Length: 323
Ligand code: UDP
Ligand code: MG
Image 1 (cartoon, rainbow, N blue to C red):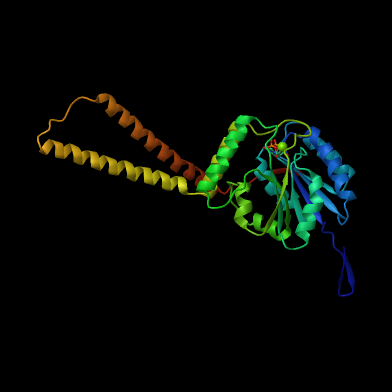
Image 2 (image 1 turned 60 degrees about the vertical axis):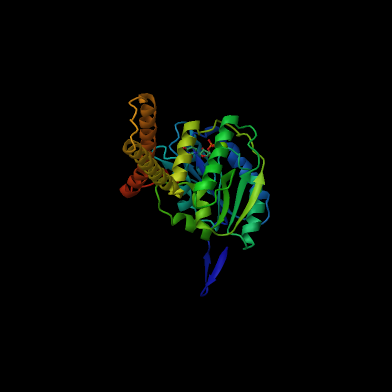
């Protein structure tokens, strides 16, 4: 868009939209994504220019050579390639930091986030009332039952303990204004949990809903355990209530022991003989209380570990190649 500046015409190269796409072993999906995104966006009125920022998160397959191919063919395609797999959160962060568009869309490479929603999202955000258009899945169709069950448990727990509202089924598929992106980038934490960071920065968000879709190609990169660990780190990142729970448990057990000691002392004073029986119940009590202690120390350890990674202040990712 040309801009007049004291007689000189400066060509404003800022693209309207940047698409940020994290890719980990997506050799088959990239081509499909590129074709589909272009076919939707080029047709759409008002989207004059765009840029693709693919982030290769240390893929082990031919993802990088696919990206090189598309970048050589189309100068709107840019890519960053990490030195190893740093995780989707790091890939999203790198893509956002690299993006230059007035609006930025984050979406998966596997077409589970339909690019056909982007024109409508852009219309809503560019009208100015909203700073972000976010999406959530209304169904979990096609997902293993056990995974859906634990996902629901996680959202339920998060709603109880977190100080921010994490929306059930929210995807990382978002269209954000530059202001919103800069707010996200101002959070420098290492332990990044986007599902919490988005609501934490605030602003006005418009929600779009859609049905779950199957991947276009390849397989999911999230194993069940990877998801469990991700869920725990989300809770630690956005709530200190587990620490409070551990403290309350400690106080409760201390008070219970005081009452029991008092009962034994009074019984002794009024002449009851204390039974030597009951080693089984004693063992159970010892096992139970030491279990609670380890549980509490474990919680403390989680927070300490996260604090340790924060204070080391290592970079979020290392870029090996970019274009
Ligand atoms: N992804 C990534 N790094 C990882 C895992 C995943 O960049 O360590 C990318 C992946 O290539 C995809 C997106 O994150 O574009 C979502 O991953 P996936 O589709 O496997 O997750 P699901 O949709 O099954 O939750
Ligand atoms: Mg997916």
